[in-house]
Image (cartoon, rainbow, N blue to C red; front, side, top):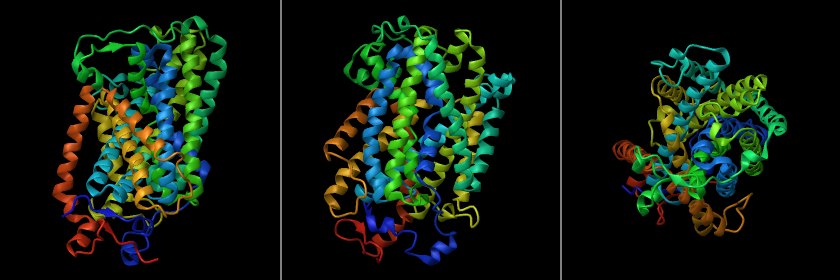
Length: 505
């Protein structure tokens, strides 16, 4: 069986209406109920969360200093390049599979599976990490016992399990209900981010920005080889903190703060006018979030010296340090709202990826079942909720946050390549939005993503490769044989270029 067999773009576009009997059996397709502001709401909902409320303090203190602002700009710039590529494909091929489906139509099934497996890692692990962060913040706001809510020292993190189950229920009930909850949470945290910038500006001391890029110094020796960025490990350069290298390391890590915006592309089948709204939703999300990130980072590093930043709740803590404790409490509440929306959108996105995989036969067909009233992939979403709840409740996984970044960057590389491939193989395909300066922009996006991946730790690469190896075993023992294209492959109906013929128009 050909592991590089491809789906045609026409097949993707018409995959919900080509088999009415199967559609009826599985509950039909997903409901179209989203507009451009709903997409931006979901995008901001998943992007603004752990990255701004926790990673800023960790990376400013340990790698970048005040230049954490530059790190966020670098990560935002790379995300923008990738978003331009996503926008073209999301508008032309609106699908629940996002980059997984784009890979399926361009470079083949095995690569599509790898991307999907990679996205499962990103959304499941991301949701679990954020759920534990939510639990820690709620414990700080209400002075709850560490035994059940702390990141360290708790046997079972009750808070993380609780919020996962509550938001999972919202995700199950339908995209409209999820939209209302997400938009409400987004409004709270955007208002508070603006509040942080406006009020914090009065407490900024420019002396705290000097030096803006702290002088490079050797990294701590304990486990330096595995914690060193990959490029330093391969070149033999002594691992270091701060300096230009530290800014790049921080950029690779805070990329986590942007990871998830591609979840907007997973909502293509539920968008009323995807050809117009998908590009606006993707680019609008990135523009708003980047402005808020840069503003908050400038204020935060200006209010206190970067060496004094808290690694747990940096944004709230700087207000406590300057004597504005009431503002810190308000920010803590906003962080709880912000983290809640991230968990919700992560669960929604993972459910759609599983739905797309099951529809293509790479997962058992039971997972493409759509609830007749709620219009959601109910079994896949339920499995997602259970998995995230277990991870969040029992596994201290904050050390794996970098894996979310490497997974996202890898997906961005594939999407960028897909734009170039489809421009060559499908030159006449309808493209409501066109990525500018092709192939320059996709090539630049690919190189930038690879550069950030090379700035991630060696141990992150090891964990990532192990996860991919497990995914390949699942594919070769199940997916390859049960894929919908496998039946066509056996029947000898594939076209010469390896794609399945498109559905009748």
